[in-house]
Amino acid sequence: MLTFKPQQVTSKFLKILNDRTRDVLEKRYGLTGSGTTHTLESIGELYGITRERVRQIENHGVQTIQRSKLYDEHASIFDELEVIIRDHGMIVDEAHLLDSIAARKEHRPHILLLLNVGKQFARTKENQHFTDRWHIDTGVASAIEDALHTLANSIEMDDLVSETELFTRLRRNLARVPSQYHTSEHLDRWLRLTKRLDKNPLGEWGLVESSNVRTKGVRDYAYLIVKRHGSPMHFREVAQAIEETFGRAAHIATTHNELIKDDRFVLVGRGLYALTEWGYTPGVVKDVILAVLEKHGALTKTEIIDHVRKERYVKDNTIVVNLQDLNLFAKTADGKYRSAL
Image (tube, rainbow, N blue to C red):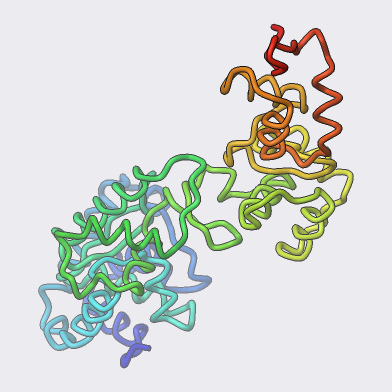
């Protein structure tokens, strides 16, 4: 919490400005009335001037405050804000900064004006990769943004990374950042800056455009459930786990149908689904046998059963019955089986 009242300070600063300049700043920052901020264009239309002229008036107002004796008299409040940003890791997401220091929303526009007036603060506007942010050291801020870019580039589309692993990767790229800021608390705050990474409902991190992060339906929730389980699951178990873990309705029949249609899953037994990424061969039992023979060459019946049982949860007799398909399989002179294709 701040030791000063933002509204009282900005009120003093605004009083040293002429009426139009004060009105422009009040409208730009939403300091009066409903707190609505106005664009340069809307203010320009009100005064019959260009948006660029409005920008010049706004900048002139800020500079007038900075050059005033009143600014020097309130140096301590800017020092206090600097300490806060430094404690946050030298660079901080604007929304997070305001949330952390302004319990009352009506104080936030006034804090933003003070940050813009403070000579030691620099704001970088939101772009496709980062959020709106404030920093007090351009070199450190640039190093942190570069580290976040490198981190995001190290993650593939379908990757899911634990927070611990994510922090480890990020620390590897912070050589240009003072070591006292390599704490988990600071790393967590910096991750709020990037728009390329996010975490899914299970707390695992990945690229924001990945379906493993921005879950949209039963298939995505099912993937997270089975991946976390680490071994094949029956579709009934998957549906139940979705409801228990995410609090979302998942009908059993719907879950089964969605898993069948999704290439991320392989049916490995009666109602049992595994993840394709675990190395399971897609297809029915005959397809698995053919894949085994293609990889290993002719095999005995026992060897084929052993290999297939690693891929499918089926009875031995089911595998033997499939081997009787003469269009697909043939016996060699020494009693082994080979592909007839």
